[in-house]
Length: 230
Image (cartoon, rainbow, N blue to C red; front, side, top):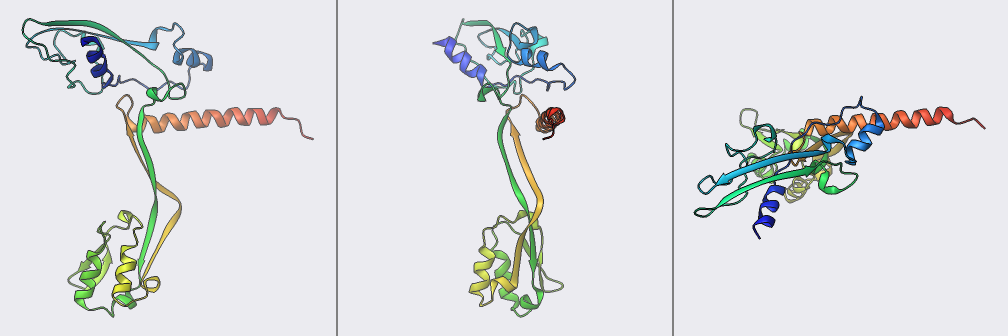
């Protein structure tokens, strides 16, 4: 009934928090994350509103010290005439290693940096209309036509999605695409895109990830030092 509806809407709001301090003892961090009776493992909030208040989580009657949700404009419930809602909620903290619902990251992806080069000797043999036709073939607008120099230039190589439409257009124009265009990938360089649920900022996620990786490498290094050579 109403209880399930409120809980479902409340789940849409992510509790904002701060990343773990890398200086905290390992055992305390593990105990904190598994919520074995440690106080910071829970986040409590309360709401008391009557009809006409809208039931927003940022209602003026809400405990001000607990307003730490990522989006405070999500409607929990719409009240009818003479209806009233009052509850206290408790959110459990955790890490993504225990369950995916605790992961602060919703989308992550990366793309390698492209290197786009044009052979101006080949392009110079094209007519002005052919040059304009060539730049329009790219859906990402990588190329542009410079009116002053009458040349095709690269506007933004980072927009290239490796769709090969420019190669097909070069063939349609009667040119060898391998001679006209050279698209390669810059080694050891990529652009990462991270979206979070709101509980942590993307920059906090990246920094914490490096901290965890650094700590794991240190543990590995310490174990390797303990190994006896054959």
